[in-house]
Length: 251
Length: 245
Image (cartoon, rainbow over all chains, first blue to last red; front, side, top):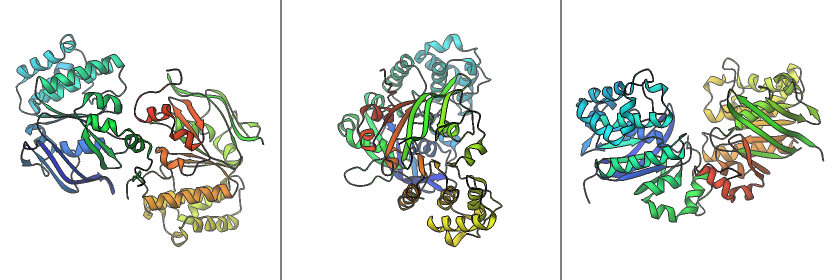
């Protein structure tokens, strides 16, 4: 088995006094394309934030590329190669596309020109938009810019929270195509959160299903597709195999 | 039997967003209606319209044969509509008992203080907070504050209780307790609308379930029918199901 790129062991975290993630063991090897799915409140965003270092681990550990990064802050993790494209894009709306992209490279100590070239090769659409104030662009253009910004950090692990949310089908197709290029051509390991479960199963090699802060399923996409009933029950908060799924986080 | 509540092409827009986009339906007295749907489907907006905390943009809501057009929230409260909020709205400087009394004093029955105290104490006992009556609400746990919210509704002895996410954030045992409280309300003759994010939670207690999607009724049927409806399942799995699709 190849060495893990990312390894969380017994990871627990949450907000205030409310635990959200319960005991997450997730091992991802280089080159995987992982779809992270689950109902609202399952802990998808929380998991990405704990991996990138925006939320501290209450218990357990996060290892990345063979190093224990549990106590590292987000900046150090970003420099080590973990990049998060946050939900809602979170661009600096008053800055141009070029400024957004440049900032990401300089903040993580990466060269601007070379990485910009790489991003523009992936998203030629952005070339004519480089001087545009990013807040004035369409949702799809913003998402391309946000993914581009994530790539400017030269990540070995790119995480995208809500790939398709609120975007038109034709834009989603475009982004899915870009995702496979990032994965195959650039060789970057990817975890993406996707609210459309079928899209996640069609796109990812491996699907991780979260339910109430726990990993309910973690398997190759075809195997998850074959367990449709359990999948549906997790999203509807119904019992699986006679066992009640903990639909509400244990306080 | 006449409907307690009737919704006639009820609409509410915020700017260009049609949060509630033409809802029709009727709810008979003494029933528990589960109102579910994905984020942004219009659940909380619909509760806001029924409790008159915001006006409808078009259409009509009828309570017990009377149009609610032009009603203020206090008109609705006096007519017997009482709302429990998703984020408990207790007054932090008052005790648990005093908070529960608010429902009895300013709701449908406008009880004098002594009677309100008695009714509120009784409600607190039924929700398991008898030992906490003189506790400032600031020191209650989340589960206790949610129970207090239900006790306040119970003490108001409403005709129609609107309960927004009473069970979100609670542990399994606490959910069972909240379910019992809601069934107790129904036994008292109260009609209840329960909004929950998780369909499985409402399926356990509701007599009928209304599924909203993008401000419209996707399906209004029994819990069993809802939980096996392909369009409902598709909505929860993220495919934007539309009746005309």
